[in-house]
Image 1 (cartoon, rainbow, N blue to C red):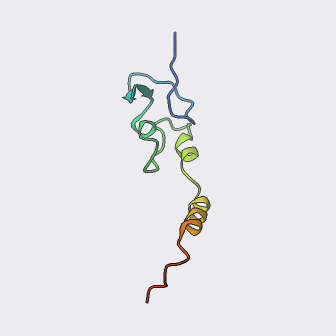
Image 2 (image 1 turned 60 degrees about the horizontal axis):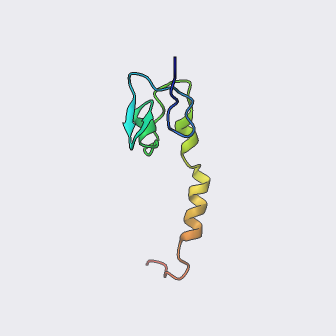
Image 3 (image 1 turned 30 degrees about the vertical axis):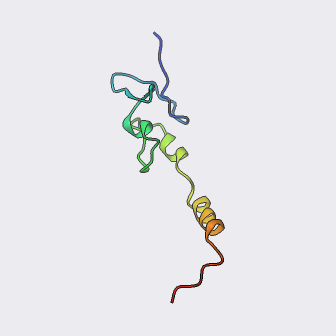
Length: 76
């Protein structure tokens, strides 16, 4: 049997009858198809791809610090 892997970069699942097709790619679930943009986990309980695709809080905080304009005056 020819099993097709989910197109989510970090997912190890195979697609089945619940396949979600988006932009010509097959995903195992809606969360994988949308790139886990709202932090949803994969439908397979033993798959951690949703956690792996989310940025770490510290990297988000650092990016904010690096992009905040230093020339803006402090609000009263």
